[in-house]
Image (cartoon, rainbow, N blue to C red):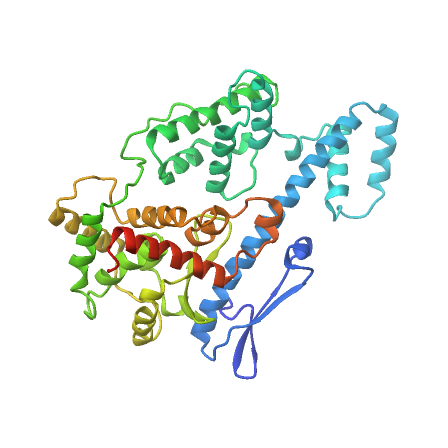
Length: 431
């Protein structure tokens, strides 16, 4: 039986979270070998929920650190391999003999890259580090097209690689490891237009071809990015509601304010508009996910789409106190424990029919488009907007791996600016 109290200890009457940092990831945790944090609760049930959220966050940081380290090892491996390919056989033999005398496996990236390169060149070992990766293929693709392609910034291929890596939640992947089902899943989850997706798949397919043309990949391997039939049902570009449609939706749902059984009909559209959260994220909210911090009401959202497991969104002041009072009335657990996604989706469908909204591209996800648009129109920088919307945060190694993000106060100002902008321009200042 699984130990349900794993990583939990008690200090006095309060539960603590205690987790050992893997040796290879200590630097990613500022040199700490343990993460110890008070869960600020006497309740074992609440402690487990908070432990689980912290554990997901810690594991995400571990994965990010290991992905970054793998990139360093791979680059060093290739440098070593190029040097060893020019070395005399006797020198390689002597070097391998010296390696065999060492005990255990290397415990740092430099030594690991050296041993892997030596095993590959001297013993003929097929190292995973020797395989061409998606980012390697991008470099080959750009090198081949220098001076030929008009856009020498290569933004389109870079974006295609970034989006695919975000989808698989890795910094890079070997081309050999990319299978057709993974590409199918990428297509299914894509929320942009079909034309843009088609273009990105074509570019990724060309990169795969380029790697094969350069002899970096078995020519017999089928290209997983080719031959997909895209339909408008597979992917769509969600549209904004008009001012009248927004006002109509808020008007139709206002009557459920305070309704014990159907209060979710009142809250979901407003929370969607004010946070940009996905429908599934809001449906699964629990009382424990809503906290007061430094005068703000903050929603903790578990992110299933990006490497960063949880994002914290300050709630717009026009809803904050009312929503907090509602949560306190619920007491504990899920806010809407019996609510299913189909019921919530049906509500929007019913309202659309009543208001005469016929466009398929207008759905609950459109509230997320409103939030993204209002963040941009309120001139909130993209590197802060991603912490609200939950898109990738790995803008660079320094920011993506080590930064803990903008301050809560900064995010609160951004939310106030964006939602306030929308209320003035789209909803006439009222919900």
